[in-house]
Amino acid sequence: MRFTESNVTAFPQRGTPSQIGFERKELDRILNLYGRMVAAGHWKDYAMDMRRDVAIFAAYRRASERPQIRIEKRPADRNRQGMWSLHGEQGQVLKRGHDLAGVLAPVERKLVKLVAE
Image (tube, rainbow, N blue to C red; front, side, top):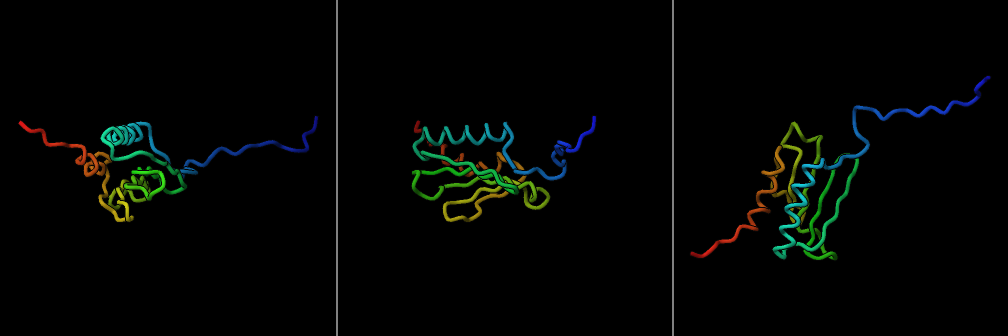
C-alpha cells in the first residue's frame, strides 16, 4: 500500500504559548475580589481578554463605561517590575508587582469599612 498524502499534525511549540491566560488560583483570587466588590455595590460587570502577550481582567461600574480597573498579566515583564499590573480608569498604572495579592491590595482597601464602637 502506498500513501500519497500525509496527514501529520504538528505539536504546539513549548517556547511561547499561543495566548496568555489566568491560572485557576489567579482567577479564583480575582473573581473573589470581583464578587465582594459587586456585593458592596462598586462593580456591576466584567470582561476578560486573553491575547498573545497579555491577559486582561476589566471591572466596570456600568456596562457602558470604561473599566474602573484593569488587572493585567504580562509574563514578558516578569523579570522587570513584575508581571502583574493594576490600571485605573484613565489608563494610569496604579500598582505593579510580582505578586497578585500585592497588586490587588489597593482595590481591597476600598472594602475595609470603619466599624464604630
